[in-house]
Length: 517
Image (cartoon, rainbow, N blue to C red; front, side, top):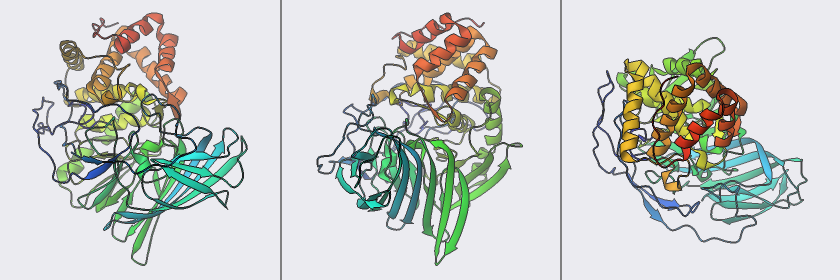
């Protein structure tokens, strides 16, 4: 994610004045509040407080967007559930559920955009990791009509965002089972304590429906094991009024029209974390660019119909971005990539797998590169705990700053020296040991990026990129953590490189940048 977080405090910040598209520049902060703010439900996934603004560094990143202001309402009355514990994430202990491993989601959504309501079903194929008399799914709001397990009626109860399911017969460890949930209603966004700048989940605005899942929002529109440690493949089928476009993750494998309705079927055949699942519905035009190269990903974008030429032109940088990242990280990990641009200021950009969401103010080269870099580092390889978020944002920030400098012909080492000076003057704390309110704070992005720059200076380009490629390849389709990354660094660069990284990751004071190797 980079809500203009690449420039402002946290992952989202006040709207920035748009810099000259021809060259990198600093930006000036402005403030305003959108008229479209809506009431949301606060999901108590953590008790931490929200973030406060922090100073803005001078960088060459693209202009920021306007954050959404929200009003919270009390959560629904709760009832007893079988297992409210979750998988024990450091920041979100109530998210995710133990006892099973999801293999595949098949989600069917019949959407009425005029009323923002859905009739839906989710068929979930999973493996039981232990004997299960019951299990939980994460689902916030919506009305559940029925639940079956392997075709047989199952008892269920609701409490907060937990849907507790009791099959007619207990599940045996190692067995595969299928749970099908039928549900409906108006999906309601939530307030996530790690994302104080925007409501999250299923959102409707300006005639468009879109989803923002990171970290907890996906449970507002489908039942899931809502944690990155349980990835799965997906099929998402979206039925909308004919003439409306519906986009999602992966490849569009079918598009049919009947009796005034259109159905779009999307398949994501590579493992995907639930927070990266996406639905976009509105008056969009698809722009196909074909494959980047033989065997490469299919590139396609979605823009508002009759979008200005400047929007389409801004997206033309994507092939150069993917080529730049493939040279450094290895082959693109999925079948397709592209950007969908909202027809309004969004407040953030988010790397939903294979189709990142942007507003019109985050389609500069740097932010496009940031969300594309996440396809390798964040999507293909995800953190096994949300406290490890620097492995997403620090890496994507470093690569986007690098691409941006190359794109504009800027001095990258000077850019990083300026960032280091700002981090030092501000006393920016380390990217490890953060609190939930700092989940998308500037330390994660900028000290995380400077940490990688220090490593690169210390060991040189060849070893640095070998480490990045190994980091991706060993965990592709799964998750990782800082300890595993440090193990790779020690393997390729030795204990001195690990000592350097640990100072950058854990010391309160900002270390000096080492001389170039």
